[in-house]
Length: 342
Image 1: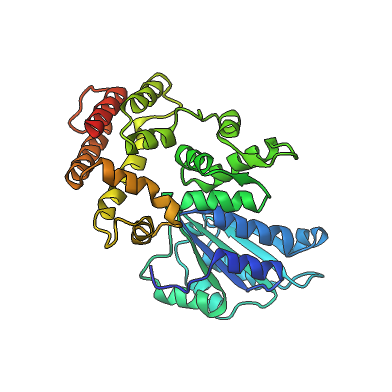
Image 2 (image 1 turned 135 degrees about the vertical axis):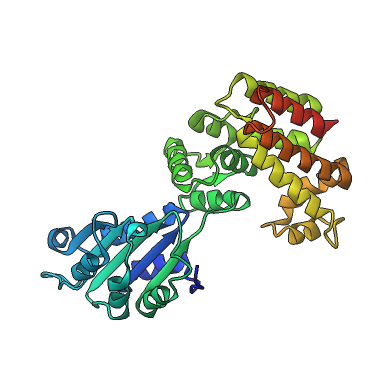
């Protein structure tokens, strides 16, 4: 992928709300959530409802070629200040020469929105990228890292005047993951369920609305492992084994790997005796988030952590059928937890 200007989602939305429009928006990346938010906002807010019939066009990259898109973009609006052309599945457009020429000299009365999901522009198309940037906005929507999900959840709810505690945040992040469309859908469901008198999300609310047990979930399993609580960890694993939909090896392996990988890095922090020093070394959002790593360094040696990481890799491979003809996931879970805690 050729180097692109760093254009943020917030800056794009700020300009759109201020009706500062660009003639071209090329929206690409592996996270469709932000691409949909931007394109939907343009579709719903640039034109008045009565202007859309003649001035708003939606095309699909698998059905049209670059020349047809460029021709549509060169039309003049009818009894409106702008026309809007939205191209979905832009990643399916093969020959982009006609579009590249259009980007170099776009119609100022057209707002062309290219939605390129599940990837980015081919890195060899440097001139194509330059042409987009010469006249418009090139935005890359990246997948959020797991460690950024709690902050996303907290900010999403804060904008809706809803509070949430750390435990509830982590339970939601661990159980739903980084699919932002699904995550926000579940959060919206939770928000709608809250009474006006109490706008707070608690573990009980999460259990009632999302269906994640407040006692037996990935967050509680992580806490039990961090604190080497053998009884609690085995309780949770048994619950998962009896209730596969509540949690499985496929959902908690990435969470455990991420924790022990960061724990290994924490041992090398220049100031690993300080919660603030560990938080800074791990690039955590707050020193409070380093608490579990301080506990982990007390309960596990560096050598043991290295061995655990190796064991997680082994179990991950076995869970995918490598060198494992018939051991069920539940037994693999028990094997891993026993190895970690003993």
